[in-house]
Image (tube, rainbow, N blue to C red):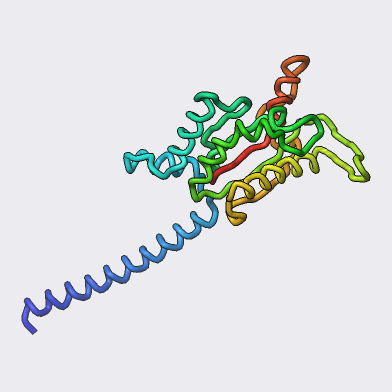
Length: 214
């Protein structure tokens, strides 16, 4: 065996060793990435913000939807008692229950439907999932009406269900919808330490029906 053959053979052995170690490295990286995906929760809102920046386009993103809903809410005639923001879970639209319902009632006012329908029609044009959430304030609520016991939990769930029924009447697919009653457990304004008018205003904000588009 001459010197050139010996060098070539050593080079091939070195390449084989490199390929083996590189293959092991790729396997380890793949396992690591799978573990990260398993342990992490993807924040939809943040992801879509980054997506719109990277692509240079907001088209067909939650960012575009959020801006569109904001224009409807702030436009003419506008939507009283409504607000929209991009949350970590998606686009969240909060609707004031004092606009939607009479006190203690779970039936949506007909006048309220007219004002919120432009928002709902815009959401309907998308393919996103919609969670309808009912929220109450922290004041204990307990009523027995026609033999049925109503509490903060049941009232928040019934109000969310009323919104679901309206969405179905509008033609939303039932596969896109989910109803949740949270009662007082997820306030948008913490009431600890508040008194008087500030406390009442915080409770009013916490009483809401929220649409989470994700």
